Image (cartoon, rainbow, N blue to C red; front, side, top):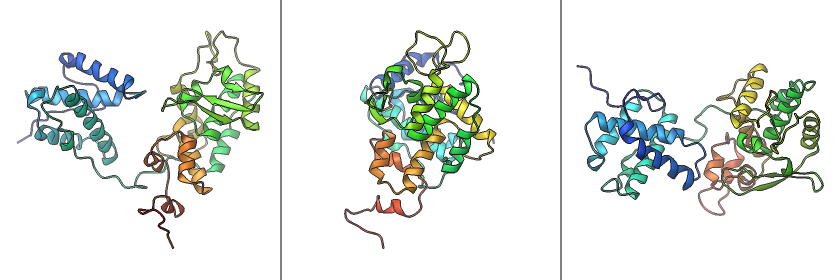
Length: 313
């Protein structure tokens, strides 16, 4: 007998009417952005939407939700996604359940019932490029056009500093401090601005682009090359990065702007920089986040020794 499915894939368009939960989902979205500092809450909200739909399909109210409903949800999602994605879905669901409990929409906090699949470091496909591959990509950009000059400058900032796409797209003309040779990054995920040394290569690329930059009242550095020349958005950097990675024939998991961030982290790692320095360069507060950017060989094991002062032979 065919078993009735109560949930649909989280990252798909909801096939059911979820209008009854719109207010709750809007409140949750605002909580993520305003209180948790989540810039892109889409995935969090999609998982919450899917879980609420499962409760509707099973005719269960929030007051009656149990560990059994959570298990059903995780099991059914497991038919659609691999372990890595399931680990993310479990984390998003746990966050949503904690939000419900904190706001007393659940009788008690049952987020501990969400079992997250174990993920082992180095299990996933590498997402970084080697230094020579990054250089080949940069050299392949046609800098004879204004668009090419812009794309080269954007890609160079991604590669040299390991910045996020949003950080590059958010750069203002006033953030380039020519006199002192500094680059101020304001639009950081963690909220606090960071000042970086303006390298000669980055300075030259920025000057070259600014000479052909369209006239605009906007103080944002990078502009679209078509009228009315609005500021470039972060998604555009991802498209540009993916285009040049693929045109050079490089195979890497999830090619895009973040590929250069992974590549910068790996380059620092290979150069045997301390893990704390790599975390600082990437703007990470938690070293565990930084570990996710690295493919291990030998030397990082010294950084994650279980006991203080422990050494490897």
